[in-house]
Image 1: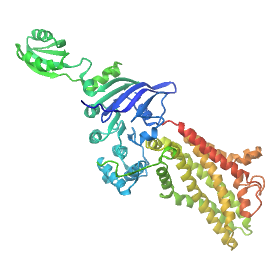
Image 2 (image 1 turned 30 degrees about the horizontal axis):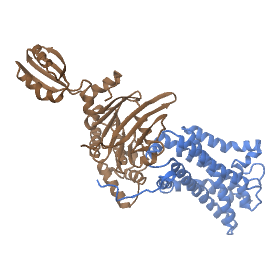
Image 3 (image 1 turned 90 degrees about the vertical axis):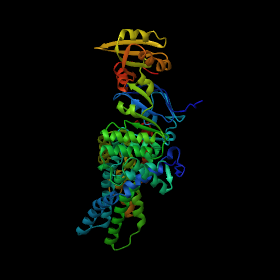
Image 4 (image 1 turned 30 degrees about the vertical axis):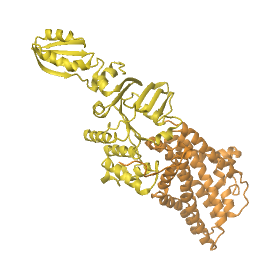
Length: 321
Length: 263
């Protein structure tokens, strides 16, 4: 039997109101250990507010959050000892070099030995490819370099939980790729909770997703489930020949829920929603191949995350699993 | 990647969490940069060179008059510097986002404030009081051709420091209550220059405001620092204690407000 991972983050009815404006309406969320949790939403959705509440930088109006079983308000410093955090716009002391910054951050966690600390700093500089610029003042760094330094300082203590707020938002495509690579490297060691509005990134690296809109959680679940859409498992089939007969044949199967038929010139398309994925996987293609039609395309329909996102954000739908 | 088992972990807990690291950082800002010698140079120039100018240019220079002048110089001018430096200590870091960054690490909010109070107090004491004060002491010794008793000078420096500590803690407290530099520096400098009129209108305020610690208001004998330097009787030591208590109160209020601050 597979062991169920404990939750690193548990949020219960957490809300935040700023001057009569609800930045975050009561939120319930669980983040499993060792997951890469993508926290999506348009600008102003409440993602950064949630992160600040988790870090104890702001106080909740109602509700509570526990991280590693500790309360985010009363045990904030103990929680932060196990967290690495990259803010949306990393801000450092500009006169310091990258090495000095990492040394400063490391000393919040470690007293020594000095050599071990310096070795960790070198390792982090290598991780984010800043070794050659390690001793330059940060004021000479580009936005991408600051972002990479931000990741290095967030990871200096090998945190159990890495919280990244829009880690790739201000980066060019190469910078984004680099950041995603670093995140992929780190997933072996930490649970990663990161906010973003870049859907492509989420689809590449996340295993679980939550979508926040106007302070409300509108979708949550493993990314495969979200990408499968609300209809569940749907096959998309293109065929030539008697499309009506093929549609009726498929519809007659007990494991088929619905069949949507479309005609495009000589080709017929079937969208087949099924109730028994195993039966469909074993029988659907055989059924059609053995009928008097030519199957030109047969695939499991996958939604793009963007489709889901647009559905729930623009349509205001709640597709929580 | 290896784990963290090879490290000696920080053991500070509660309100002390992160204090030693933050103290190191704040001290480094004063003493591991050019800040300390620039401040020393400024205040030696402003207080010591002005004193030397008067001392060596006036034909009938009375060194006791010089002590009065020095008390005014060192009591007033560095206080402007204290307000200017301290207005950035919290407001600057709040607006630049570095405070939020530090508070995302395992550091208590009390540590942030206490490290700023401690390091800036020491920086002010060394660069704005001790170094220019010792320079002036040297000048007086040179002028009188005697090795003067250092104790009156040291006790006077202590009182000058309390005076500057008032502006330091006041400005830090204002930085906790306001998010913009304007009110912080405005109220700090406004009080510095307006308090002489406030004390003139309500003499009781002379016990609670630092003006009369080093600057005489009604007559030459009503300020503490010149009296200590010249060996004159001090009218009352009470303002020193009251103003020190106000400094403590300002720090408590800063801690209270900063603990409620949201980032």
